[in-house]
Length: 88
Image 1: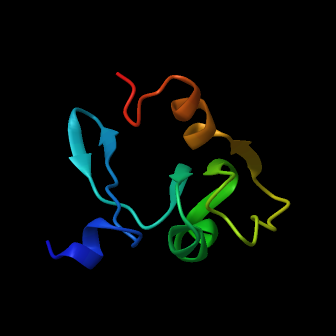
Image 2: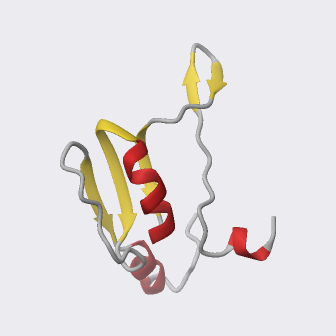
């Protein structure tokens, strides 16, 4: 993975557990989006009735879909309050 892939790009992982096996899908029940490029790519992949969580400080153009639940989260702000970039 080169530097651009690790910083501010569209990396993702998807898994679906079905009958004790994992498989890949192109539609998601939910998505956690941390930057604008990821939102641009994955907003349309959330199934109708699904859930999209997004980081408020890194999204310039918020989600526009009305057929999914959309929740804006202040994850970076909360991490700053805790003085920790990673919270376990």
